[in-house]
Image (cartoon, rainbow, N blue to C red):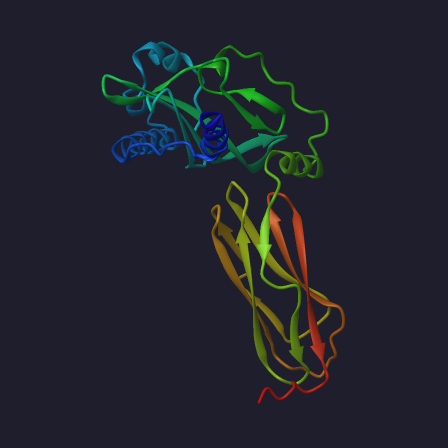
Length: 274
């Protein structure tokens, strides 16, 4: 009876245990190989990338369609088979041409790696590799060469493309304040911090909404990688014209998503903090 009771207590504890961490030297070796592979893809140096491909996947790699992403950044590594295989997830930025117009959209890719003769090598699994694009899920890597040509959506207007981009990687951000107070007649600068929580890079554009002389925002635009942040500064230079309903607008590109932060101009003096 006591043994049975002990087992009941042990099982839940084991269920809470986290997956074991990979040996440091194994993880470092994989990340070095994967980073080099992504670098060669961006450079278009496919000959060097070929040297990192497993022997059973070299024919596939030679025949696959290849592209040069504008950016690639290693994001996550998931191990299996006692740390002899892994899936490496990366964020990317891809430039596409639709109706003679260039669009830059965030995306992602997954690469499979395995240990071969003591070295990490990229390998092909056509049944599992895919990417997410404006036209839906598409095969990635070697499988792309045998995939049927994609059918473009009928509506290729800028509004439709922007809407499709949101379904690929919806913007996610943290802003540290909901309003920015100022006192009429008193020059001051207020700051707001924008943190990029999205899995891909974004561009944040800042401008001011209203007919208001005297307000200036800096910087006007800023590119952010995942988990990076930027501080926007709004400076108020007093003028003779009253300001009503002024707002700082932060627009996330390429999603066209807006965040509005009211600029509150008070005629009352600031309270004495002493």
